[in-house]
Image 1: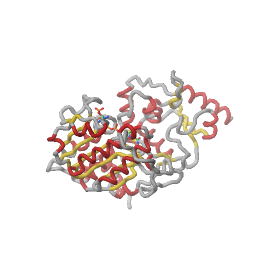
Image 2: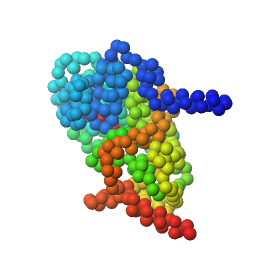
Image 3: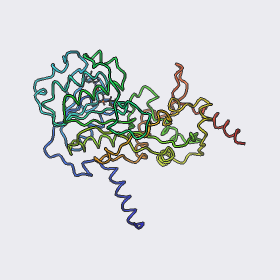
Length: 381
Ligand SMILES: NC(=O)c1ccc[n+]([C@@H]2O[C@H](COP(=O)([O-])OP(=O)(O)OC[C@H]3O[C@@H](n4cnc5c(N)ncnc54)[C@H](OP(=O)(O)O)[C@@H]3O)[C@@H](O)[C@H]2O)c1
């Protein structure tokens, strides 16, 4: 391949990653398929709603009308509380909606799995394609690299029989129970096992732990500390890439389970993307991992995107999704979105990481970073 051909190929690939499935695969929905988004106004939901609208679908939301009520006021909303026992919330839905045939249903539910089985019980004959946002936390053993969709899931205790009972389980079990219920009740599903979602939005804007530490650190510039460790990879998923794939699967009738993330990426490549998304920092200090740990910078707990254990944490196999058409945008685009979101939430760029007034440690402060760099430099002399 000569240089011109190479540039053409690279150019085409980068354009592809910028476009939505409707542009790339010529998806234009002339028949206005009916989409029901369960939820839709939290962290992930708004991006799903927008992508289906952009791709020409007719979108209806179902929620309690409590969260982010300023969003999508122009769309029909079915008011329903999924957490009521004995399907009381679902039973109270207007008959007109209960009898509707939904070509597509997207469910982001993460609380009691009983709410999922109740919904499917009530609606299953009237769903063309059900999409469920799950998580890689459903896998039983993360102590190996390149976990595929066929690897064993967490073993489950007795199935919760009520909403309240289901709530008592931890997140990973709730997701595993939910998947089990879906597989038992329907065939026409796609399950997305997502890995650490990143977006313009923050999962919980009131909690600084959900702010993007590394993009913010590079946005702030100056002298930056980085962990220097062997075989250091990271993995996450860009929300825009995930929602494009959901629409693509709807269009292509792609069913089954998929691990959803970027491919395992060397941390150094992630750092290159951080530099490209921001500006060249004054200086990078690649500091020995053991030295950082001795100085309180514990992997993952304090330093995000550094998780040596369990070994498979950032090495999930995503080939099945790629073969089905999943395209992860360049990390630099995902990082730029995260920075824009941070700037929107913190226009004064005044977030303070590190030890909080309640004693909780949320990443590390700029002062702590400076101290460690100073110690490291004097150790090297
Ligand atoms: N892997 C990762 O890094 C990661 C990170 C974040 C999230 N996730 C997963 O991504 C998924 C997305 O969650 P999301 O919160 O962003 O979804 P979302 O659909 O954007 O927001 C949640 C929706 O659920 C509705 N809701 C809450 N309680 C309800 C009830 N009792 N009955 C009916 N509707 C109710 C809320 O509206 P109302 O309050 O008005 O009812 C809201 O619209 C979750 O499954 C989560 O596990 C993964």
